[in-house]
Length: 133
Image (cartoon, rainbow, N blue to C red; front, side, top):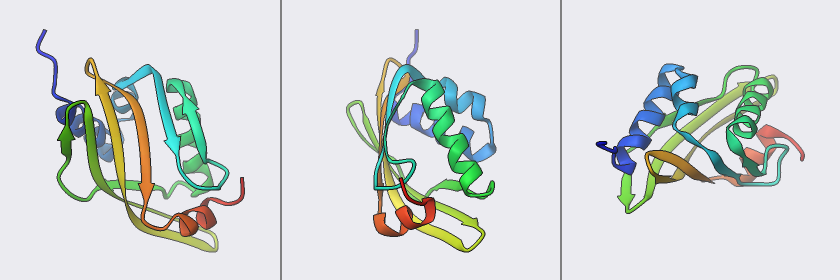
């Protein structure tokens, strides 16, 4: 079997998200994946498994009135099984908007994303956009 590099898995994941191909993006997540959402807002904390992450992302789309978007903002940086990807994320809902950079740090093993850690350039503004925990 010709396994993809971690950076190639990350590229496929972000490409699928950008094109709205959610089944492909979710299919790249390990069944035991853990997503670490930063901040002090209603979505902050650890989310486990494909179903947990699906619920998280669905909640973000609902809270952002369908406007939440994520775009790759620079080249991926690979170090072993870790891939750091600069991103820009935006959202616009009644009375609030968000537009900021961040880093998504993915751990890839066996061709699957097993861990996701997110970093935002302005955590307080992100918390304000998403709302209280």
